[in-house]
Image 1 (cartoon, one colour):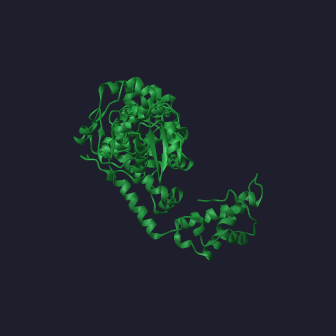
Image 2 (cartoon, rainbow, N blue to C red):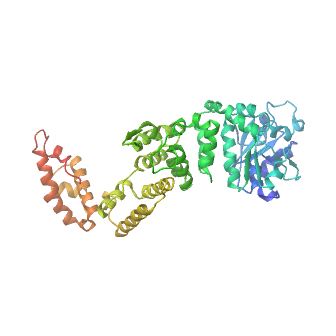
Image 3 (cartoon, rainbow, N blue to C red):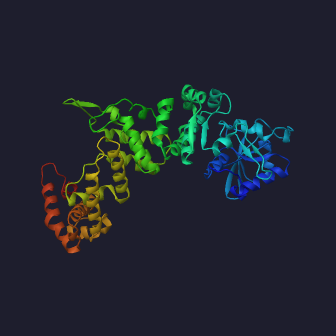
Length: 470
């Protein structure tokens, strides 16, 4: 925790906003979540100024001002920063508020007591009606609404997620946190209000929460409060779904263990959260044992829909869905199979799949990583041999194939290149131009011709599409 506040903590651009408002005759302080973070010794995610100046007057003071929808706030662009400026509610131009509506009244709208504080770096005055600073200096974080809890949550349902985010933020600072009882009760009774919030506004809060130090705790709290049932009902449905002897937890409990174990990278955390999402939809029993055959395929489809609903971009969705779909991969038994595996998943995804498998194992009963470590050694050995990992690494190209086979551009060329690629993956020494052309004539062409002469074939080019790829 930080036991002092200093002007040196405040960016020059924020100080410029404060000075402009002061010079115009208004109170202006650093406040809200950024001041909380400063006291916690954390770098603020954004900077906020609370002022007695009516929001409608800010256009006259600053060149670039953007209204914040539905709030008495503006984004003021100062230097290379955007500063959130909160003023008196309902105050318009010419209403004569000036210094009559003080900063103390503005910070009461902050939602949580830990955010309801303000500091004037020029005078050194700290406005802290809830004695938050003293608690934070003592390493204690209280999650409590600044006002009637139900009213606070219903006024802005995103505060329901902010309550969970505060748990994460206190953990970031190594601060002990407690959920005030009345606030916790309102969190449960008002959880359905989050349905009013567009999914795109929920996503940033989930991303902040999921990358925290103890994501398992935060999602457990979301389940207890009912938030999970509203925001991610597919995940809530995994609660109570028991598993086989390889697991000590139900599907939800196992998911939280995997989430806790995996590296705190956003795509990995989401892959961990959704990797078993399909299990409730494919339960079967065989010889008294529960099975979830094909859950990875069902789960990848569900993961796509969930991430799309939340407004993630296409590349992120593709990356997470692939991990969910492939997380049950069998360990290749031979060096050749390892090469094929590396080729099919790609080097970028390979490390992610291994990390997800590691976390998945540690989230189970036995936590035996020996097979995974052996597989990693095999991968290292194959990578050391430096085989080609894309078609462009072959010693021949499409023009060579067309010359060798006497064909025009078409599907048969791609089929031939993939055939050669598979062979080189199995034996890197074959990646020689003459050797590959020989393979085309002696193995690929006869197979293609055989397919072409089969009943129902459509000629050599059409048959070539069915040429073996091994």
